[in-house]
Every structure is written in structure tokens, then in C-alpha cells.
Image 1 (cartoon, each protein chain N blue to C red):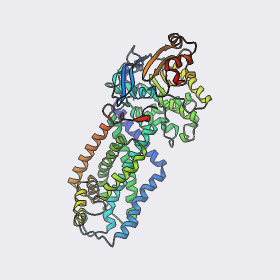
Image 2: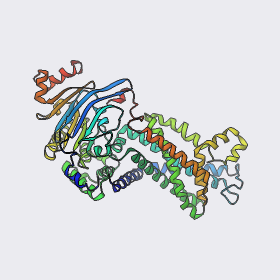
Image 3: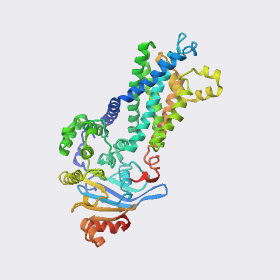
Image 4: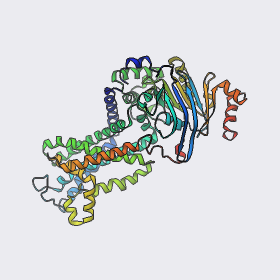
Length: 271
Length: 260
């Protein structure tokens, strides 16, 4: 297969994912409404209760709304990553994963293309959200909107790889409700998305420890610092490493020889 | 595939003189449950082979192994002479697949579905458009190019899937129960069409089904039952082997009366 063929393949997968996204307007609206409710209702209500003292990377005292925007950006990507994982379980049941996997390109390449496509869709959602937040008055430095792009690619790949890995384990669609309860909610709530880590530490040592171990915390911090034109080295390193590990495991999970795909049981095995 | 390399153009079907598909000594099990045991057969270039077996015979599993969806198995599978395991790029590029379950994107148009498939095979956009047009015309769905698949009938969707399977000009077309869920007229039309395709284009076809009336006189028949090949030959040879007068009786004899 020639290098140009690889690019055609990536282009095709990205394009299909965007087309599907465009056709599912309700998904786009839902993806926007969720963080907007948090921003406009929850954060507005909590503004009085939770003042955020001056903390990196902010240069002044900030409103609570300003603090949670990067966390909500992470939330958009987290939901999107898990939704792609849902679509992959669904795809596999419906067979379109088969169409992808009989492509002659190496499987690891196909899976990375699929992840990049999902990340691309999440970035479109993130920028739509940031634009609305900007109009609402939560404005980061303009260059920050550019600097945040590479951060979004890395964090999108991280949650996407997690979703891909989960999809190689999940057998049926019903199990996705479990993913919501046991993956999305803990990852989001036990992180620095809603409260700074030092605040958590003041109230609960255990939650603080868990949040400090949660890779999603570092994804959010990477986004937060990038949005304010700074690179959080530690967060970048951790996010990249976690992405690499999750991605490797996910590719292993889809490996035709060793993977989980053959470990089917019962009547579903032979149709 | 982008523009074919010279040597590929000369041997688009695979390595010269090699069968389109060769399966040797194939064993596969789900956990402790054996699904395929000692399965072996070949499909010659341009041949129409019907893989006949009751539900649960192992047909879909066999297809999953040929397309390398699974690979944990004993035995050898070669497509056009290329080993599916060690030369998967060359091997997979030579097969087109029509899966048992529908696999089109319902919200995308016919043309968009075909274009996605072409990209998965690394085809250039110009080539992809040309081939899509040709295949849609051949399958009689060109007036639906800009129609969303959701609005098409079952028979039309199947024809789009066959067009898609042929888009990258494979030497071997695999169809897994392609007439499931179709009405009688669409079913006959598809059976007839794929036979004609095989004769005119020289594409080798492996057609899995449990419906005996889809077999035509000059097809080769492989009867698969409980994961083993029970018969392999022309219709006449299978009748002679079983000492029966019709393929229906031969099938019953080979698969046991309990399957009737």
C-alpha cells in the first residue's frame, strides 16, 4: 500500500465521521446543552458559594464560571470519547466495524484513524462551546484559543483511547449505562474539573488523593493552561503517557490473534 | 489501492496460477467449543462456489477467519496466493465482502457510502468516483446515488452493498447469506445477477447460504455441517456421492434428517 493510500484512508474515515455527526444534529445539540447548563445554571448558582482564589494560570481573582470552562471542555471530550465507544460497540453489533476492519490497511492504523476522527468531532464541539462562552463573557486570551488546539488533540486521543479500550471489552450495548456510572461520572467529579485540587484537599484527603491520580485531572489542567497561553509540562507528560498506554492496550484488544474479539460466548457467536 | 503497480496490473487476481482462495486444515474454536474442524477447500479464479450449510454450521465464522476479523486458529488461508496472516495487506485488498447483516451507513447517501469504502481501500478520489459510477450503473442503483440509504428498499440496499464489495475490483467476492430478509423477486434477481457477474467479469464468488434453491446447475457446492466439510464438488458429483436424486435429498442426507 502506497503512502498516498494511507492519507486517502484517513481522509475517508474523518470525512465519514464528520458527515455522520452533521446528520445527527440532536447529538450536537445535546453535546452543547450539557456543558452550557453547567456553565449558565450550575456555575452561576455556585458563584456565590465558591470563590476561587488567585491560582495558576489565572493572573487575577476569577469567577467560578471562568474556572470551570476548561473542565467543561474536558467533559465534552469525555462524553464524546465514550459516545464513540458506544458507537463502536453498536458498530460491531451492526457490522460497520467489520467494514472498517476488512480494509487492507494495518489494524492499528485503522484504529488510530478512527480515534483521530472522533477527536476531530469533539474539537468541533469544543470550539462551538468556547464561542458561546466567549459571547457570554468568559474570554481567554485570543492566542489561547490557538494554543489549546494541540492540547485538545492529545486529551481527545486520551479519552478516545479509553473508550476504544472499553469497547473491546464491552460485549453488548446495555453495558454502556455502566460505563456512564463507573467511568464518566467518577472521572469527571473526582478531578480538578469543578474544584481546584487544593480546595479538594481542604475538604477531603481521600478525594484529593484520587483526583491527583486521575488522568482526567491532568487533561483538564493541560487544557486550562493552554487556554491561558501556558504549557503545563507535567500535565502534558502525564496525558501523553496515559494516551500511549491506553492506545497500546486498545490496539492489543482489537488484535485479531490475541484480542478479545474472538472471546464471544453463547448464541451470538454463530449467526 | 492507488494506481496499480505494473506487476499488479498484470496479476490483479493474485499470484499467477494460484487459486482465488485456498483454505487448508482449518481448525477454530470458541473457547472449548470447536466450530470448524479440518476445513479445507479451494476456489479457482472465476468460479462460483456455494457454501451450503444449515444455520450454525460455521459459515459466518469461516468468513470471519477469511477476512481476518479473527485470527486465532490452526491452518492456512491464502487469497490469490497471499497468506492472510503474514501478507494481510495484499490478501485483504483482493477480497470484496458482503456481510450477512446490513453494514451501510443509513444516514449517508449511496455515493457517500461507496466513497467511504473506496477510501478504506486507499483509492484516489478520481478513481473512486469513476468506479462508483460504473458499479452503481451495473447494479441499477445510479439514480439513487444522492439518496440516503435509509430511503432504499432491502433489495436496493443489498445491491449497493454488492456494488461496494466490487468497488476496488477484487478477484474474490465473499457473500454471507446475501439474500436474508429479501422478498422472492429481489432474492432471485440477486442470485441471477451475481452468477452473471461471475461469468462476465471473471470474479470468483464464494456464496454462503442455507437455501438450496440458490444453487445453479454449474455451480460448485461445498456442504458444511457442524464445522466440517461433508461434500465438495459439482452438483452431479454431490448427488453421486450421496446416491440421491436431488440436491434437497443430498443435503438432508449429509446434514442429518434432524436438520430438515
